[in-house]
Image 1 (spheres, rainbow, N blue to C red):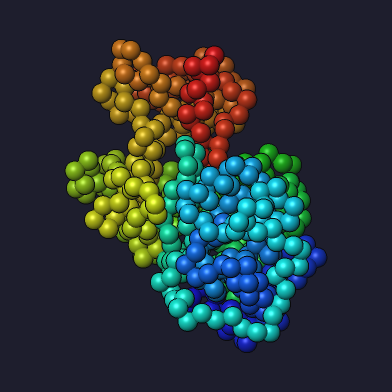
Image 2 (cartoon, helix red, strand yellow):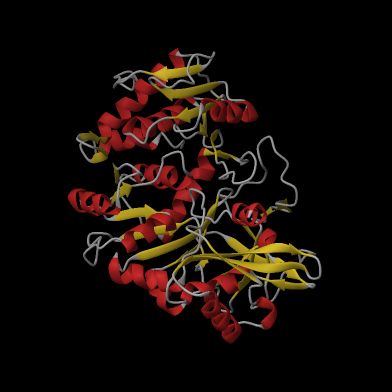
Length: 479
């Protein structure tokens, strides 16, 4: 079955069940199915055909989700775009991936070029005429799942309907999301997590309630309470903002599942989240190319605080050396994985050594414990090689984030004449340099103690919460 096909069943078996909440607007599953038909007819009338790549640069609204499902129904391929991008940014991405059409909000200054459509208010009206294309199958392409593009243009695989449903299986089985849940979406829908969790919830017959990603944490907590939210996905940056707010504990009492993904949380942060936000924290290690890789459950947060959990449903994970031979438990090496949800190649881009023999190499270094728990050691490209010795930034970052007064920190390598590279630590907080050095000397090998310590107002991060280390290193050169 295609991703949109299940909504025919939902319309018959749960017509009045709430599917979407968007502000004051409420949509049951029967209404949603008719809106998907109406939107599919509308887009087809604009010349969008099966197999064409379609840029989607829309607000975080019910219409955005309807558009994704309408494109699935008519066989279009979604190219996610941020509606806040400048016209040149949208044009560059559309050109890179060969988008035949781009869907924009009314008034978007990028509209006007052939195939660039400004959609008027109310365009996704209900239709009683079903839209059907028998050529669209479970193996038809659905989404170009793009990387975050922190350096250069993003790249990504072309994921089929079936691969997307395989990703949903991890959400349903490992996170326990189901038709009885009300999922609150508080991240952009062009972003992989917001899009994936929202579609997975609608697919299984659950309810999705939308709130602006720009909402404050207090407003978010009130919204979750108002709609009876039981599931919520936040990136670590949002979670840290919630911890900084003076919210009553627990801030999200109705939540059955709080999902964090994008970058690893510190063990102390996990405990603070369970004490102050909700005890029901699930941390997911994931990637653009394969969806969920591993999951750390609430019970495991205290017992395996440095881990990112056990491999998810049907995901095979191995740690290998530079010759691609599997390493024994406890040894750090290159992480690779494969699953029915994993990509096998990039679209219109070389994969380099990322794809090999059916495995995907995300570029992370890790070790596997004897009990199956996965421990990240950092990015292979971020590893500092000082005098021929491998230094994993995450080892040092754990020490820094443990220190009183340190709110955020990251570690990167900087060029050095004698050793090739030296360790640089970037810290946000109120602590002296001497205190940092004393703590590092007490807990780390001498060669891991940062050579340079720089205090910064904030750690720049992308939308997934990953530190933009090249920007920090560049500030040293500029200074």
